[in-house]
Amino acid sequence: MTGSAPSTWLDLPADTVFGPANLPYGVFSTPGTAPRTGVAIGDFVLDLAGVTGDPVHATGTLDAFMAQGPASWREVRDLVTRWLADPAHRGAVEPHLRPRTDVTLRLPFSVGDYVDFYSSQHHAENLGRMFRPDSEPLTPNWRHLPIGYHGRSGTVRVSGTPVRRPCGQRRAPGDPVPSFGPSQRLDIEAEVGFVVGVPSELGAPVPVHAFADHVFGVCLVNDWSARDLQAWEYVPLGPFLGKSFLTSIAPWVVPLAALGAARVAAPPRDPEPLPYLRDDGHPWGLDITLEVRLNGELVSRPPFGQLYWTPAQQLAHMTVNGASLRTGDLFASGTVSGARRDQRGSFIELSWNGQEPLALADGTSRTFLEDGDVVTISGTAPGPDGTRIGFGEVSGQVVPAV
Image (cartoon, one colour):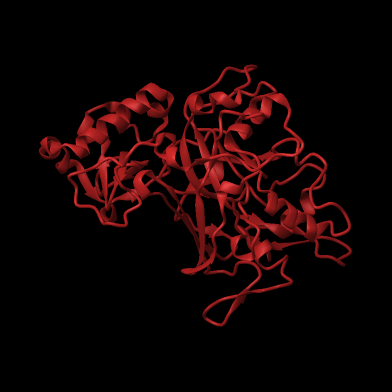
């Protein structure tokens, strides 16, 4: 049951994706003020520290609030919903609304550990067909477990952070030895991320059904990738410098409570997953549609709802060996791609490894990213009563290597 969309006394744009059914959390500042927690509503940010007087919202991150757990999350969400619905609260609430155009959005939480998965079947098959054309597209383990790697949490930054073209070793096909220099195959990965609020104990796996007991919310992710650096370094241990230079996240974290109408079952799994990965009765597939824009032009609409492994299964696998969770841990889906070309979530797929350049409306084309390019990823999901839930944007501009 998803319920009906709540009402509000605010005059909101008819097409807003930040309506009262959403209420995503972020951290913002204004000139001369310290960063504090805000809630997006329409074209405004509600200063949660100011309106509640609770110091937990004045810390400059969501960390302390996220650590309080689901009961506190529900209490605050219910409180804000009531304040925005009942005109009797208008006089107390309205002075704490700030136009979004007047605020600076910050990294919303302190990133603990960062794990990136590889859970889109279409993406994995596309890369398999490119690099292993004479073999099965999927590796033998892919249908049995959510594959992932540990990334670098210190280079997870908020949307708008410039994307400095990374340098490193690369070896082109036919080159006898590697060379060093700026990446020539800079790429994106359009992803959805999940933010841990409640920690877990070392040695205690988190089962699929406990996903919502630990995960606070959802944000958009762009895991920038240097494909040439990655191709040379990743055998046999996996991604390293080709990924660790920057991962961008959107400034807004949409709470799980806003996504009831977006929940869907995952695609059929064959073979049946091992018991710890079975999610019967606990479906956490999410019908999120991403949009990827290059310099303002829409180039792809990846469908997250088709993801083979759900975030609940990713979390269960990530902790099944006893690894503990910390507040602020971030894990992401991996590149989201669909069956069609216009649903591919990376330029290595959109250009088929550079063999089929992507034609743009201005008459130019791209295989991989050029200096000056701006990539923006946005996303929406179904809300109650036909509304749409928005995740904001994660954006970055490529700047030349040092």
